[in-house]
Image (cartoon, rainbow, N blue to C red):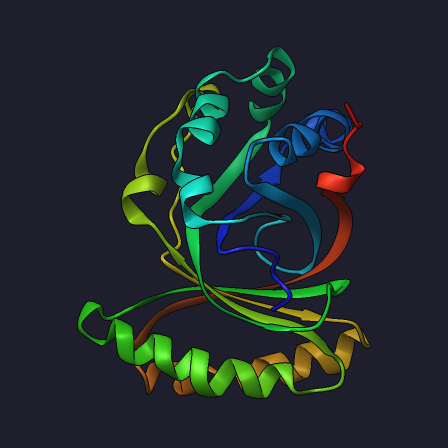
Length: 232
């Protein structure tokens, strides 16, 4: 599998223009290293929109679901640094989910990403998971220009906890319940065209998915993993 663990935190947001440069400096030099240093966290990635309603997509991968719902991560959320407090005030339109990884296929990390946020009829959740994990995502991952295809499912209770970092932003998060991420390492246009067809609304609705289907195409800006952190 190309995701490096079974837990994930997925975040989408905009940034107010006056906070843009501060965001880049903070996110790359303090925030991502801080998150990846949490026990169990393994990798952080930031993407910027090519064609999406929200400009930034951030993905943190952890070894287990318990690592993204556990006390170490919660403690960081409850004790934001002064730089975090000053920077997150520039965040707008935040969507954030603490997730378990439902399925992950692929052999690497791609510079392109499609993210798709949607919901599923509760009574058909297992039917939908099986359709994605056994048919739709494996077929996507078999394409030569696809690096990976993943299904995340939000932990609704963990995602709904209001923490000090969210309070500093002053705006509540939206919580996407189901998330598909497809990573590509080929040409932008072919990747986007294929993803739109492979994950068409009607194809997902056949197994219980319900809209709105919020799709966005992104390009990778930054990656930090545990091997990048200072030793000792």
